[in-house]
Length: 250
Image (cartoon, rainbow, N blue to C red; front, side, top):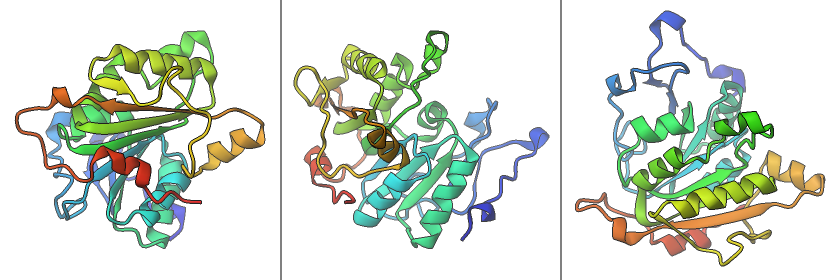
């Protein structure tokens, strides 16, 4: 498959969410999200099994999540990316590798979490190199804000973890502050709450780029507190310690 084989069928006057060949298309500048009947993640329309679901946000060209899906076939993976060209690259790699445990979301992370993901349906979450929006006046556009942190707490199973990676020190500090401010999350790493090494984590285009430029990579990990458990949570998969046992790509 070539990346141009995935077509963006949106017409401005007829925009609506739809699923096309393992890709959920969520239109930009769209507000009628509640009109879409999102299939359950374990339904035949999505994964068709009860395996645990992990999400990677900011998937870029998909190098990291493709290797994760290949190396961990008993886990269902969701790649979330807001740029169509990048989504096309992930999709073509998924097809060429014959991966049936990967689902792709073309849309904004915040909207996918809020409108298309069930409560306590995700085992673990990853955010790889979110846009730091360097200018002070643009910082409001950063993904890691309290509203999104709350959404992540809603969709993540108690005991599940989120691992966030960035090369930007100011954004690293903001991420730590935002996560520690929310009472549903607790630190996994001791003070200063991040590490510069995470053995066999895997790699991506941006990881390789920033390493080649001599930048430090910062890994932050937080756990969803179990006391926030709802009365009727969804069945869970591996225990959160399984996050440390993933067969990461070399």
